[in-house]
Length: 391
Image (cartoon, rainbow, N blue to C red; front, side, top):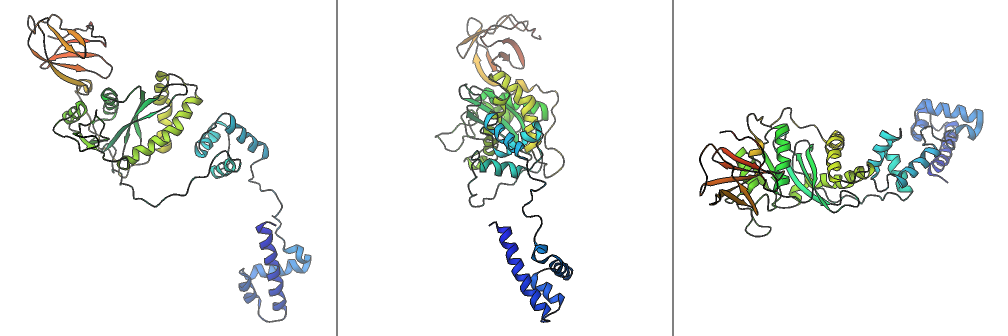
């Protein structure tokens, strides 16, 4: 017997007992209604229905009828088939979003989750642990950016890749995300140039203590602020505070974003049939990030922005590797096993023994600077690029 039917039987017994005592003049209608927990008008209506139809008049006529909001059997079978074939492994929430968007499904997420759990397709979540207080968000976009990389098998059948993500602390909006073979200085500069060029300069950047971000005397030790890395030098040049995280919990906001990305992005890439890094990065930039931010980004606590607009600054010349070298007797500069030949210059006959700076950009190209003047630009292999150099 279902619980509703049992409760109806209890209510019937109680009503008949109260009705008998009411007819014996033990109490009036108002007192009888209070004992039943209903209004006086409802008690009078029950008495009339019992007088006309007996106990049958008191039965709940909704019992045994199919709810008008019930999901039809054919749609339930369709949902199960879609999950088993096309959306296997999706979370209930992610799957329900695709049902609503792509399959004109109008029933609730709660039904979808319960249905999948009843079929054994989705496990019930474990009970949440003890409450922890999250670090308050910054009130304005641009006050604090998070940057981190996650190594994962993002593309089916492909080796492990790093996803470099830069997001805002105030809104959790992802400003930049792309796949690379390995996280490092070049990927960091690429991400920062994308974000700074589109939004402006933030007040601070929050990262882990990876070797391309900070130098540490011992593994897992304190960062050495006196010996900045190439990333630290570039951020200091732009006046951006670089904050180091000392535990995974400190990076909780970005860690939670990666949990979402490892679950959703991998499935979206597979669903779109994407198998190459180039296609994946285009899909992430043009399709996934707008949808992700619309779904997960929140409104900042305050109106406005802390980003600082930049004008007249070539970010590419700052967000790059810069190292000093001495020009050899052959008027060449040695850099990372490359020989960079300085072309003829109107500045002087040659630059033998001169101290110059070599810049390596995130796309692998190079340039040689003597003071503020560019002496030459080179491709990945060190071959001179045919670009006119100003006198």
